[in-house]
Image 1 (cartoon, one colour):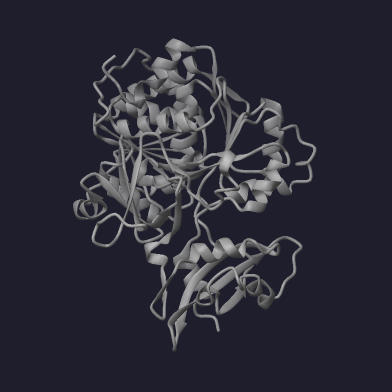
Image 2 (cartoon, rainbow, N blue to C red):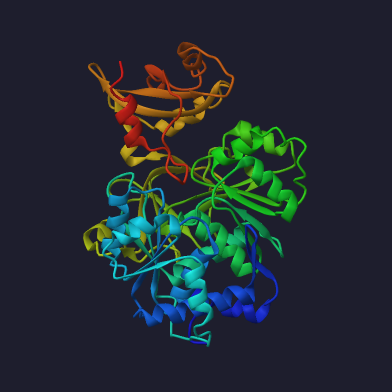
Length: 494
């Protein structure tokens, strides 16, 4: 087989475990042989539309078998897959389509109107008509030469610091990231993975979906998240692996049926996007379950560090240890190794660069080391702790203040359900920290009481000079706080 990329995975899996269930989606169940057949038929169809190696094929829709079929079909042809974020506004989606130069857009029926308004040369709607066309088409093997160095996907960053950029991930990037995940994670043989986080996000696709399929497990795909349904599916399919952001696991724990639910099949709870609060870790530990917490970014495919369940509490707040095939450095502004500074990441999972952005690629990659933009420290055991984003740093009276440190301390107060810390202007100190707090369900507390819990735990200059309450905090689909938006909403309040 000349295709050594992820497009060959369905053929290799169909050869090894053809009858094993690959995907469950609602009432649809696909074996690995069926997934390969559908992907191959779609590959022939795309080739008929003119798709050739290096061409871009975009997908727009929720979690669905057609997402995976398009991914693997594109990979069979040596083309480049572009998953689109369904939560983006139409102008943002157009930017991704135009910027990537996608020649084909495969989309679900919900996006028919948007697709019709696009200038993308070819558009195909997922549904019965396309299924009939593919069933009548070719299914002969396709074996286009693909190497690990060839581009596999363009995944657009969240755009929280500006207009979304396309991170170009090679087949090697995705394969090595899957190997990192399988080495450091706990995917048992015959894994059944419940995935309701959106596949267009790098963690759901690359840390959960692809490792499951590489290992020959079963992927239970949900188009949207429901805590009650998650508990039901765990029991029905004997789910062994779950992935989500902390808020999803908080909602599951808050379900009335959580205490009595049969969770005995679960072996790994993988969480990303934000640190898991210690109270939530303890809640799941009481059910005999632990969290594996991941830290990463789209540009690293995305795995950088992983905190195992055994150290979830004694290393709480840490990003964990670097993945098996990843390396990290902490450097000062001059680029020299330092005890506290910017985290740099290197490894076979680090992106090739940003699509058609040579200047930004050069700024982000220094001799293969990716500049994360995160400020980090390491402890004596080598565990990495992310102190904050370089752009979120608050400088108050000449002192550097890292909001993440304050946020972690605020979570110790039982009334704090969610929080963010931002810098606000101050006549005396230039800027000072302000806390924005969402109270936990049913909790009541005054601002001064919450701030008082920080006294003695943080230096005086780090304690927020003000605290405002909010009903909710804006977060990205990956669970990350949208600090620019929070500053807009709460940075000018008296």
